[in-house]
Every structure is written in C-alpha cells, then in structure tokens.
Image 1 (cartoon, rainbow, N blue to C red):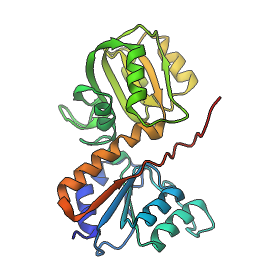
Image 2 (image 1 turned 45 degrees about the vertical axis):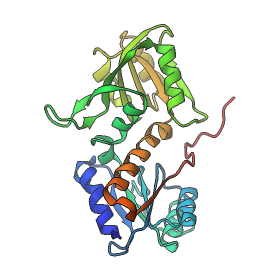
Image 3 (image 1 turned 90 degrees about the vertical axis):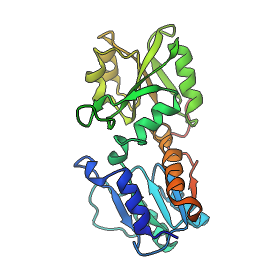
Length: 266
C-alpha cells in the first residue's frame, strides 16, 4: 500500500507546486507522509461538510482544488470555520492536499478537463506556458458546427447542476465552431480573446462591466457557468489518473456534494 508521501509525489509530478502562481498556497497542508493511504477522496472546496464526508467514508487523504489557507491565519482553533475543517480532518486521521493554480494549467488539469467535458477537440492552451507547450492558461478547441443556443444547452447538460445555471451573452443563432474555456474565474483572459477567432468563451465569475465592454468589440459570445461546476469536471480526471497509477491498492471517491455558495434563485 502506498504511503502519503508516495501519493503526494504522484500528484506533485502531475501538478508541480512550482508551477503555481506566486500568491497561491498548494501542496500538503496536513498529514504524516509516512502513513499508509488506502482511501483518497477528491473535492473542489475544503468545507467542513466535505471534511465530514471524507472522514465518514474513512478517507486517509482529501485532495481539494481550492486552498483551505490561501491567506495567513493566526489560529486554527475549531472555533473558526477553517479551523473546524482542519480539526475534523486531523481528528479523523485524514490528510489534506491542495492542487490549485498548479492544476489549472497542467495537462489533465482543470481547464483541459472542462474542455473535454464540453466535447472540444484539437485542444491547445489559450496562453501556452512556453512556445509550443501543451500546458498553459485555458484551452481552445473545436466542436461540430452548432448554434450558440444549442452549445449553451450542451454546457448545461455537461456540468453538474447549480442554482447559478448557465448565463449566455450573444445571439442564440450565432454559429459556434471554435470555443475557448477557462476553469474558474476567467475574465483576465477577455482582452486576449476579444479580437481572436473564437466564437464563444466559457468561464466563470464574469463581471458586469467587463462583460459588457467585451461584447462592444463584437468578439466571441460569452457563457458564464458556476465556478464550482466548471472546476468539478477535473475531479473524475485526477481520480482516474490516481487509480491508474496505484491499481487496486487505493480506493477513490469523488465528492458530488455541491459546494457552490449560491443555493437558490427566483
């Protein structure tokens, strides 16, 4: 049976911590590297509810996308939400590892998983990590010619359901062939895509003014999806990768618990 150190080494080989953005907090957050790992659970957010699910299932390791401690804290007491999450995990013998921006740009990473979930082919990074690299920020690819309305319906069917749903900016009958995606908050790529050959851009957390100004340039249509739903598509990918690397020695589970902060809308 692999140790925690063995599993961490695999994940770090696929999603190198040194490739994370400078502001980020990735890697092993809690756990003894020498302990054997029999069960690994994957989730987007390290909420206390997710921590409880991991412990109740008997997980030895919880792998999450979003950091528990993105900014410094002076206490991890169980009197705070983050402290309760950490206390729940450690008292249940479950380690915690984060793969955030290092997983966003990687092959078999977040944006690539989103692109494949939406049926894109011939993938390439929007912004390659280096000239000719297969890794980098976002992904762009092609789909069989369709309408924006039909493509948006495909997006809604391909992602986990949320109260947010799928918001679309553009003419319903617009022809869609070439698609760009970025898992997570992607408005930082709007300037890059404004004058390109992309028909639609799929991402999350688009702000009113940025979206409105983008559309004034007659560039791609916009599809805005829930941040959690877009990034959830990576979990089955990394789960399958770990199962393939460890064989029958490790049991895995993807949490389907929706941790999107919005619970309903009128």
